[in-house]
Length: 448
Image (cartoon, rainbow, N blue to C red; front, side, top):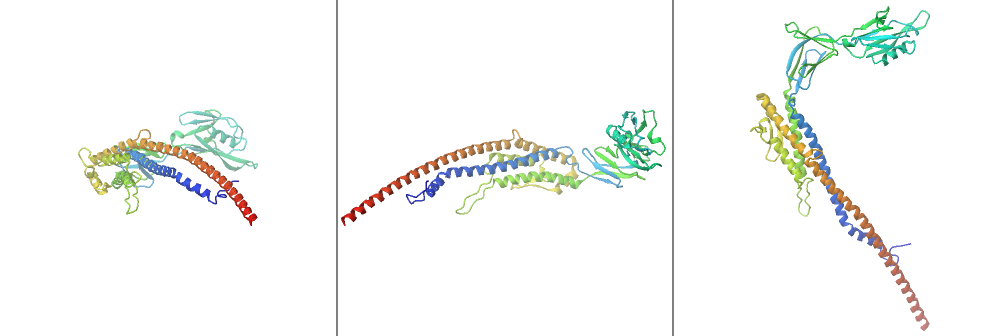
């Protein structure tokens, strides 16, 4: 058993801990350096993520339709207008003659044994599908229809009871898609057999039909347009129309430029750039301490890559375009380096020169895109490489930290052995001192 200080009356464990604390100072400094570097990397990664997002937004802003923001209108709630990519200002009247419907039939009532044998479903284009139920019940035929992949859905419907009290059933069969192409007939046997919808007590519930609208009704240019669904894709450039009911007269539909939304779109893009510039400025600013205090450096202070990014991004958005300053369309940087956007000035520029303003904005966005990609590309972006370099540096520091763990463990073991040896010697000396004292005391006693 090793009891520290038993012989020397010293707290050797505390002494060893104190010595180890001194020995561990370089490792503590190393850990602090790792922590600082990890904070820097974390902020660089966050900045890089923001740059990648900005690159995507800049690519969208640089597109020809970036500022083509529209508002839609319809004089009847049964007609919906959607302006998509490639849309342009548009105004016209339409008349909805009919809406699209799915073809649907219901069979005559039958007993449990009336649905056996083979059937043929004939699509509108003449395609024939052989239907052979596994049993003779309505459920068997409905299951066979549903499994045939013929574009129909079948459901068994109760039809009461026969005179003898046995249950009767019908089968309602509906096309899975609306429009005339979804029409069908179902025959007993082959395609020449009886059409089930023509049997007594059977019916065509809904005749499959296309939706139909008329443009320029009542004029020499009157035009009929059909759709198998209730949506007319690209009725005009980039404009879709969806109808839900027949109209009794013309419905005015329109697409117009949304001036407010267009300015807001441009402002939102500039705001993203301004936010990144502000983040860089904040992270690069050192906090000067008062007397007796330490100055705190920002996470980006002294980082040449971030400094270059800040310069290039600011130049991309404020450099003249074909000799014209971006401030002409409301984009400016003040003497403190703060980027701002004047929505009113932008709107005025759009009203005075729509094409020129759009072109300038697109060129600015393109330059921002190129700059952000130069720095944030996941393979060879300058900021990406900076992060990779810092991560490698941290890995090296962590390797040194692990070696320090081993070194300190060995040093503690050495100190414990040395102090254990000292305690052993002290115990031996104390034992000798005690024996000598006893001998001297005995001699003195014998002389007295």
